[in-house]
Amino acid sequence: MIWTTILAGLIGIIYPTYFLLTYQKTNNRINRDDKFRLTDYKETIAIFWGLTILIFINYLITQLPPLNLYPNFTTAGIILLILVLVFSVIQYKSSNVTPDNRDIIKGKMKDIYHYLPKTRREFNWFIILSISAGICEELIFRVFLFEFLKENAGLLLAFVLANVSFAITHVGMGKRNVIGSLILGLLFSAIYYYTGNIWIAVLLHIAIDINGGILGYRMNVLEQKTT
Image (cartoon, rainbow, N blue to C red; front, side, top):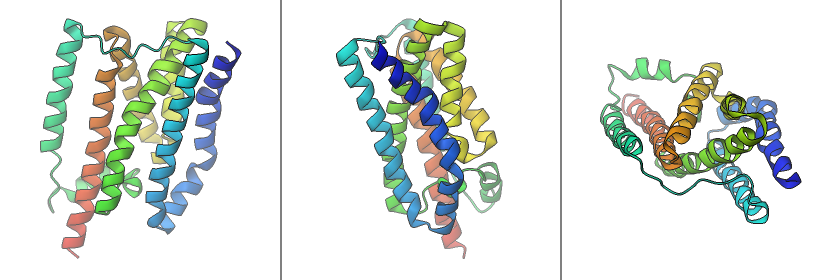
């Protein structure tokens, strides 16, 4: 139990604190040097999978907390999965960037635009980053930390604290995005809790992240064509 508690503290306290202390430095480096964006993608991917591996190692040793990873499909879960797939298709088809809507889209994404991919290579790595975030962040926050807090602090605090930690790790993308991440985190937790299927939340998470990358890449391509 002690190792599980230490890991929960690492994920729920130290990990978000790390982002609070370093996000300004990271953003400044990206703004000064476009090449650092790709470096940060790779470092973030390594952090995601590093924490995920620690969770699995802890589970193999302690069997705590229970990791509910089996893709259980209830009627509600199947309906939600279909809705997620439909949402993903609609989101992709509506992510066109034109000279008429470019400034509007860029204005809405101003807090995260610096972090979005600008080249084809960055876009490819952003896809890997998005898939890693969808899988790893859901396992880290919605499965491990949520289950740990639910067992030791109660359901309500599990919903709140797990998703506050998740939201804080997105502080580098602006205060508005922190609030959005909190809302999405609560949604992902609700999906997991009421369906018992984390993979629905994983797919939705991946779809949302990839769409942001598509918009960022298309905006940059359009800007290059018009300059």
